[in-house]
Length: 244
Image (cartoon, rainbow, N blue to C red):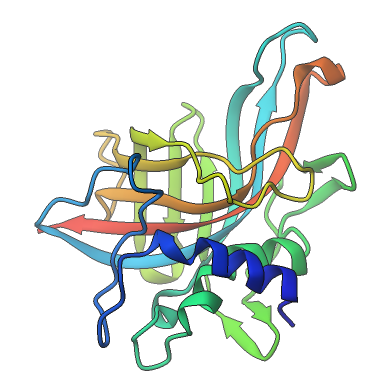
């Protein structure tokens, strides 16, 4: 059951979407009036919208390091494309917008965890994935879609196994998450919104662009804690596009 806090946060965040029309075509969210990601090219076709739920990983060379260094991510992806507002089985705007926050606070991390909170999180580095399973939110079942991870060359990868799609990407654009974005269970803040493009490594299948939007949690804690490496829980929407 979605809490009153979650719906309140969703109502605050509802402005990140373009104004709805009758049965609208999905439109990638915008972060604010003055700072937004580049729009998809005119020939880009939306293939999937997913919730990603997992961990953002970081390292610190020393406690005096100003900012932790990003060291990849692990997340399980769930297909929310049919739930976009205006579709036959779509949700109301506030409920759809709240899906990342709802998932973050109501679900255990869907990874093979060696440590799980309240202040320390870690997945099994050699075997992070659990058996694929759908996401259950109340009485609603959201289908398993695939995994997000970084490959041996530290390139972000998205393997949408059930859709036969794959993306090997690099960062193309980024903006800071909105001020009202949920800071996550560790209170570290929401990771930036990103536009990612194909890496050119001939590893992508059916995907050219990926957007990471409506993030919750995932920002690093301070290196002054003394940890040389750590992981932060996060959720987000990922939007996947193909050029034609």
